[in-house]
Image 1: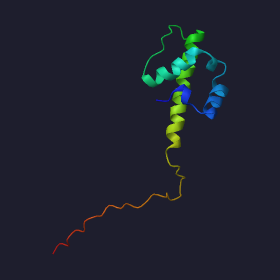
Image 2 (image 1 turned 45 degrees about the horizontal axis):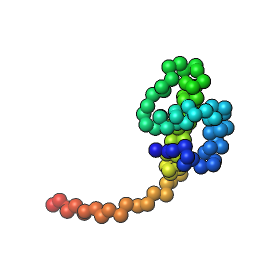
Image 3 (image 1 turned 120 degrees about the vertical axis):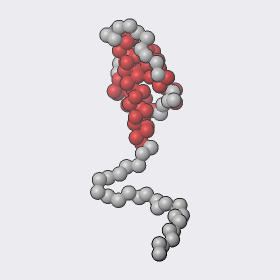
Image 4 (image 1 turned 60 degrees about the vertical axis):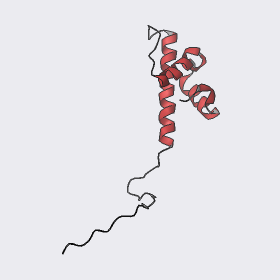
Length: 98
């Protein structure tokens, strides 16, 4: 789980650029953590400020999680060989049939 307090300064800057002014409301950060815990929006009206703030917080959590999971994957360009290490597993040689 990614806690709001553990976000880097760069992450916080991107969130404030993307989700201003909603990132200033407490419901935004509640939505951020609720999304990761699998909870639904507790606010009945989606067009309320609280509901919109919660929704933007959940969206920010999706975005941060997706970005961090993609950063862990190797980048593979089409048509170029990967720099995958060869397997060190020894294979058994089959006996030739007679």
